Structure formats: structure tokens, C-alpha cells
Amino acid sequence: MKRLFAVFMVLGGLVLAVSPASALLTDVNQLPAEEVTAKYNNFSDLWVSTNGGTSYAPIGFGQLSSTLSTQGAIIEDRGIFQGTSIYPTATGTPVLWSAGGTQQLTGLFYNLVLIGATPLGGSNYQLDFGPSTRNPLPNQSSAPAGSGGVLEIYTSNVPPSTAFTANPGGLANPTWPKTAPVALPANSGPSYWVQGSGGASRDTYTGSSGGNLWLSGTFIPYSLLPAGTVTGAASGVGTTNGFYNGTVLSEDINLGTGQGSANGYIHLLGGSYESQVGKGDLGLGPYVDLTLGTLLYTPSQTGSTLSDIANYFGTGWWPVDSQDPATFMVIPEPATMSLLGLGLLGIGAIRRRMRKS
Image (cartoon, rainbow, N blue to C red; front, side):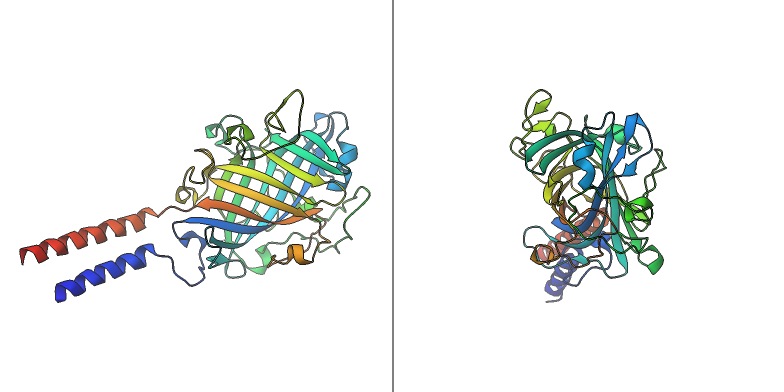
């Protein structure tokens, strides 16, 4: 009877070691080993540098239609975001981790240059973005050929002085949508973006890039995705499968309202949690570690379409905001696998003793 009790004790220890707890996690590093989806609030804008210069200024999506024809213009897509919740992809419940506790997930994306715009009718355009060499990640060369753009996610504690906000300047938000180009005030949200110069000098934004670098990665080219993963409308010379050659991110967007959608596929390159993310486990090939799906909204849409946003901060003059999902596969920690191995060894030893007796 004592031996049987010992077997149950070992099995119980294994369950505790490898099963997720039902309580809300206080540390995002304790996610269970399964495919999970993270929701996040995203605020983005476009920056322009004219005549091949290195100085970029935010322009607002409302100005894009006139800027597309600007001679020598380089247009970069940039955004900031905060994670709001993480849950199992398969079931959607229970919520495993949520913002509002003692830890926050924040980040930013950039280095995505407009390489083609396809009219879709009216104010609707397909905007295709390719890689920029302005401030790539230090280990960018280890990514698949054609990859580009930067995604950085940080974890940090949340004292008031470092909490995420899209509006550090505290400006009253404008009325959206805009039907004319938007002049962004000097102390608008986008003006707090600080450009880095490469390597350890990363781009930064108040409240978005502080703390521990949790994950960093780059966008892989659409050409590496399985056929049919994404569909586009671009055609003619320099396009393939509906996208401009070299596209790593594409957005369908209404330039007058900011509404639309986008998709990105990330190859991870670093961060403290990078070893915990399964490689190529999302059915999209060996390069895709994390998928991004975006529904873009204008800040004026505060009705049912944004009802699932738990922490809405306002726009801070960011012209486009959204609630997006990001999906990735969590794999067991080496320590957890060691516990599992020890437990199985213990069961084997108990079974041998029982046979001898």
C-alpha cells in the first residue's frame, strides 16, 4: 500500500510540474507549453524622409495619398503596442496572463519601408512594405534572406513613471476620422519616438521600450510562406502573387479613415524568452515563429468593433490604432523537462521494486 501511495505521489508531482495553473499568471515567463495567442493594443503611423535623407517626420495616414508621389520620399511604418491578454489558441479560455497587474508587455515595430501602393477603389489602398537598412537588429544577417523590419517586445514592472501610454504629452485627442491631411503637434505621441543608429542603439519610445528585452525578431518575406497563406491585388512588373517583390508586411487600408487589416510573420532572433518559443510550429514553415494579424481602426470607433479592448488609452495623435492577435508556440522549459525525466525515472524505480517484492 505504501508503494502504491508513492506512485500516486510521483504522478501528482508530475501533474504539478507540467500542467498549467488555473490562476492568472503574474509572470508571463510561466506560460504553459502550448500554442497561445496574445492580444495587444497597437498604435501606428507613417514617417517620411524626403530626398533620401536620414531625418524622418511622422506624417499621419491622412497625408499618404499626396505623399505617395513625392519625389525621393522614403516612407516607413512604425508602431507601439501593449500586450493586454494571453490565452490558449485552441480554446480561447482561460486567460493565462493579463495586463493590469505588476507586469506589462510592451514593444515597438519599425524599419518597414513602403515599396508599393495598389489602389483598391476610392480611398482604399494595398500598401506593401519591404525591409529597411536604417536600423536593423544586430543579428539580422542570421535571418532568412529577404527578411527585414524590427519587432521588439519588452517585459517590465509598471510603476507610474514607466507605464505604457500612447500619449506621453497629454494632448487632447483630435476628432477622427480626418478627411484632410493631419498636422501632428510637436508634443504629439509620435514625436516621442527616438531613432537609434544601429547595434545597441535601438529605436525607443517612452513606456514602450523599457525593461527586459523579451522577444526580438524580423519580418520574413511573403515569398517564403506556403502558397495561399496571403492574397494580394498588386499586378504588373515587379509583383508576385499579388504583392510587390520583397514584401514582408502588407496592409489593406482606407487612407481617409484608417480602417483596414494587415498580416506579418516573424522570425525570432533574440530576447530572454526566445528559447521558449517553438520553431516553425505554426504550420507556416521553419521560418515562422510568431504570426501577427491586425484589424485597423480609427480612434473614433469606440463602439462594438472595439468592445474587446480591455485597456483603451486613447490615441495620443497616433492616427491608427487596433486590437491585434499574435500567435506562437510555447515549448517546455529545460527545468520542467528535467523534472519530467526525474519523475519518470522515479516511476521506473518504484515499478522495479514492486516486481522484486
